[in-house]
Length: 194
Image (cartoon, rainbow, N blue to C red; front, side, top):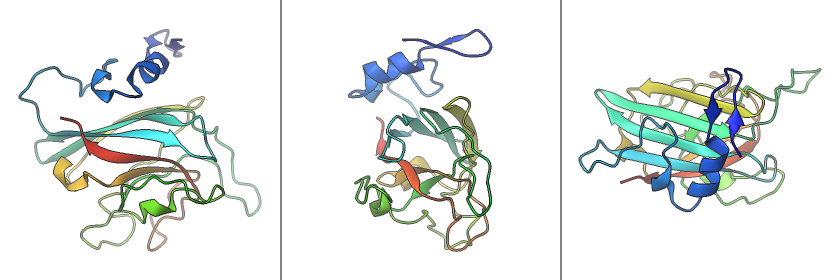
């Protein structure tokens, strides 16, 4: 199955998941981090898998050392569609997206999954909104999101063994000690790629 985006380009995203679930080294669909060369910068990845609240959510996050920091690239599908806030209910999306302290993606409680991943990764004890693990939110585009950005807060070696969490709600970047981003929809342990 091939994904057709609004610009008419075909994205082999769905096929790539079927082919790379067990072997992320085969992950090569127009990925800026894919290379078959031996002398490459340090690269890490997290295979994202949704839990009971978003079972269809899946994707990859790649991290690559670049001068003065790291580049982060995320591509996921199966995000819930945006629902605006109503009354005292928070909006569903855009989705909080963070590095968490522990690379433990055990589901645990089905109504409050992935608590074993711990809190936001904050190695230099900054207030929330300035944690090294605070990332931009993910916007669902019919369930699909792709984004890349630069951070000077870490190098790849610093995050191996941590976890990526995608949340149900947006991060407010000001609540302490974390951003009140709601339930944890998906998790992926960060592993060394090569």
